[in-house]
Length: 202
Image (tube, rainbow, N blue to C red; front, side):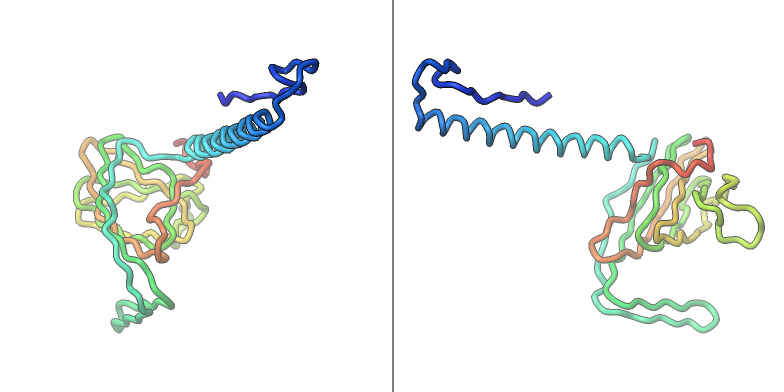
């Protein structure tokens, strides 16, 4: 807890009957006030950081490699007839990351600033959406906590742009993922989400 100091209302040693040392007392008072301001500011910043950490939904038994990233400086357009159309309107970052989930582990609820292309290298990865529409054409949706299961050799695209989801390893084997992110320049690959959407019991 920060200590707060009360300025003296009198002369030396707080005695109003004794003459004060105006020069040194003034400097000491200013110094104490500056010190108090620094203490209060540090305390508020620390409280803000603690609150942020408490509200996040971090992963569990999950590890990620440092992202390897680079910037595509100029807009580009890729068209493969009948297969793919990709167009950017400005510079973007491309980042690659490996993620490992131990049995029983999960990523925590989160989103991405841009799309993420995910390859399951090993294990069985179970994905849950946090919104009301998981993008398919049937009536199943994230509000029903419907699992989407991907096994080794399969891949999927997370749309990004604030789409909230969680990935879980509900098997007895390790899950390894390789993820490529398309990001705004300088943006981190992950945004923690709090509180949890509430459509799932976890």
